[in-house]
Length: 231
Image (cartoon, rainbow, N blue to C red; front, side, top):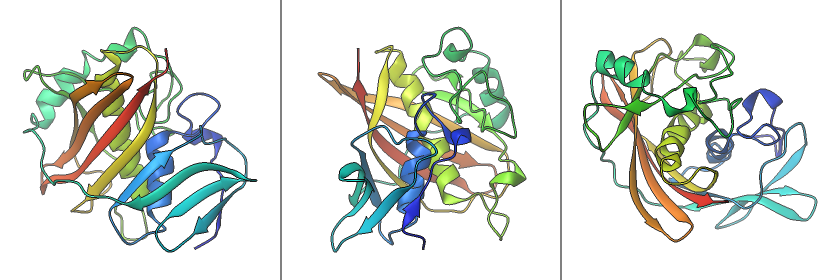
């Protein structure tokens, strides 16, 4: 793989930096283990960075600064039960980001973006008050050569629902660390339900879980994330 990485502006989270889940997913492509990715600096856009592969760690570098690091992680492949696709459509109408969003141009959940240029995953409260849910039908632009959603886009989809549920507790956050596991490939055009739930809060750190279900395979991917309250 190419040892240089550049994040295109299309894949932003905050307007001037890369979407955390997308960047984490790109980096996970370099390793053959369950990746635990720590974002140490906001990943800059339109800037060539170096991917440095070491024995027990991978680092994304800009000059002498570490932007992100990857080590082997663990994650339990389990999640709360998701609502069906129709119920997720209804839940999405409750998306808080339609009223107020700190990063309105986010590639995943920004209300100022449109499909297929962005993922447009807008999770809202479902009938189960402990989770938020959104429908997602991945566009063909997200496909690999086999017609499956590329790894980095699955990670991106797993990112923001965890952030949205955290925004109910804090109005300004950044992704600090993410671990994800994809058990089943997701085909483009497949009806998916993405869910997020808050696990706990410890000071300025908030912990969330996310998952993606499909109609054909059930639970396909899960993630844990640590968010930093930047207020």
